[in-house]
Image 1: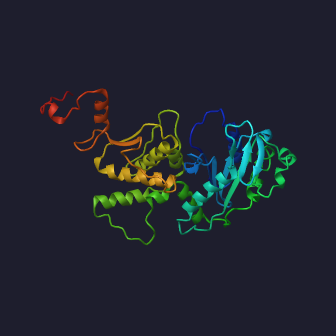
Image 2 (image 1 turned 120 degrees about the vertical axis):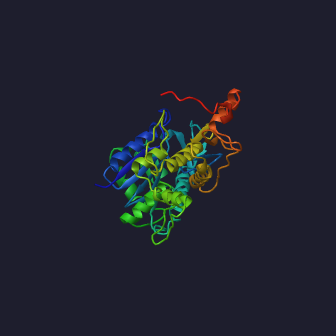
Image 3 (image 1 turned 90 degrees about the vertical axis):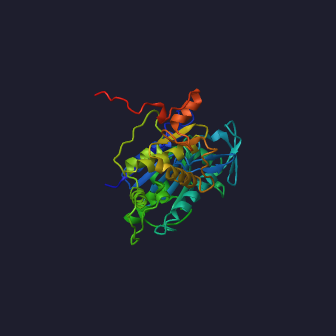
Length: 350
């Protein structure tokens, strides 16, 4: 049976997102038995006006390629006019928008990521659509919007119950492509899982594991490709505590760096601390977070530990490096304990 995976990256409040939820539900039902990987709010951030925004729905499909769906919870009376890509609104939270252009921008950003992989460069099809789950097809036609030369591919309320998959399959691709064989499909899934950030060793490349550093590099390359459960854990923001368990070398550090980076980009006002216990990993963790932030923003942003609200701390810290313990002591106004504060010969009770 084909592997279909559907990932909701965050528990969203019900208000204002019921439209996206209905489109998402229809998508999961229509493609439940296909080889696909879909995300509700995939962390790929593009400029939209004065802020950055991730795509509402991103789906990768072995046969159809990359699909971006921009969802608008508009009623037909809230669309005043359409001029090119610009839509003017009535009684909406903003006066105008360009939903199809947003979808295209997200699509081109993801295609540019995919094109960095030689095996799939220019071989993956890409489609962009707008979903209007509160508008029937006949309402759109009654306003004459279907006659506009710039009318984009649209999923209407009628399509949520029947024909959802056909609408997507019949949408002309922005970029043509081919049906991917299993190897190319695996590579495309790897792009969504940000595998290129920690790029695996290419076949035929000789590697040495004579030193500890070289062994660590090889281990990072081996665990770069996440399975479905790891991918979900890396992209999801839980409502409460989340426990991630794994043996040494299973990818916990790589997963946490990706998770921290995308949480920071989704919620830049949050104070986030990534805490670790092995001092030798400090520079590697900083580097990984920077790579993930660059990946999620198409290289438009980077990580500066001095200015970002995402902080990387060793659990205890060192003389020249703050740690979680030293930061807590500083915050509460108490002196940090050091080894000489404790007797050398302390009896150990058994």
